Length: 140
Image (tube, rainbow, N blue to C red):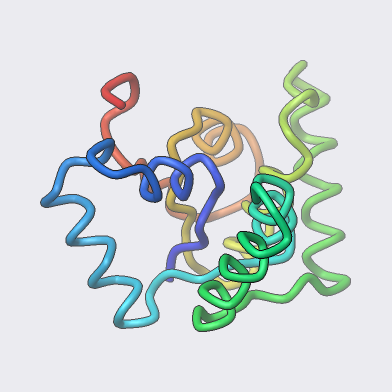
C-alpha cells in the first residue's frame, strides 16, 4: 500500500502532466485499493480545494480509498523521526511529510510522492517505508 502525498496528487489531477503509462499504472493501483490516504494528506487536499463544492467532491473521491489512522504510535514515531532529523540539521522538513511517512511506516507501506523530503526521511530516520516517486525527480 502506498499513501498518497499532495505533491503527487496535484500532478495526477492535472491533465497531461504525468506520462500516460504512469498515470494508468497509478489508476490501476487506486482501483485495486493499493493507494491510501491519511489525515495530513486530506487536510492538504482540502486546503487546496478551490471552493466548498470542489472540497466536497475531492473528499467524496478520497472516501473511497483506504485510510491509515493516526494513533499514539504514529505520533510517537513521527516525533522520533523529527528528533532524528534535528540531530543532523534537517528538522525543518514539512511536519505533514513527517506525519505521512510515519503513517506509511506504521502501515508497513510507502508514500507516492514528487518530493525529495521523503528520500531524506527514508535515509536519515528510523522510519521504514517505500519512497515511491511519481516520476523521475526533475522531469515533471
